[in-house]
Length: 113
Length: 114
Image (cartoon, rainbow over all chains, first blue to last red; front, side, top):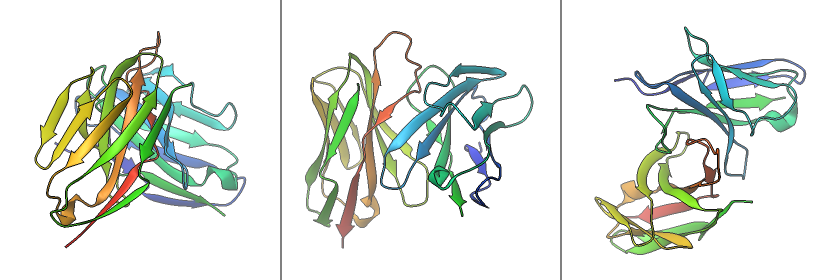
């Protein structure tokens, strides 16, 4: 059973470009979470999604960030007009039910030049 | 505001030298406390869930305990492969808090020398 798959593993963007990060949850998992880990900071919750629904986006910056989990295909975290402060590791996690026992992917590391 | 503080920030041990990591938390009601392990360049890996004071969980050389204000991760006779960052996280019992919305501490970087 494959784990949580994230791609790309590394992404370099220039200021003002768009970044798209993809996450395929573990098979059978319908709950997807995105977390961000800034340099020298802990993991911070961003958004919680189920298929076709955003359940909790209280950790998402109000502008430039959006997330989706369509009926078919991976969950996508989209960052528009990236700035240097967006440089971080973005982790996706999934779970099969309502639990804090999350299965994390290996992360996507975004560098903004 | 929910807070999780882990200490020490870094811990260096000799192989076989037992020790403990601390996680202090302030939360408006605790639904669960979680320990994760994170290797460099990887995502966190779930270790334990603790739900109530007095509860203990064990896995190989690791044992997690919980009180009303803190949790400890005890490492007995560690080996070099136990080297990693250990993360503590809480899930508050505040109404409507999503289950996977965890508040993480900064982590303790553990290095075990052979």
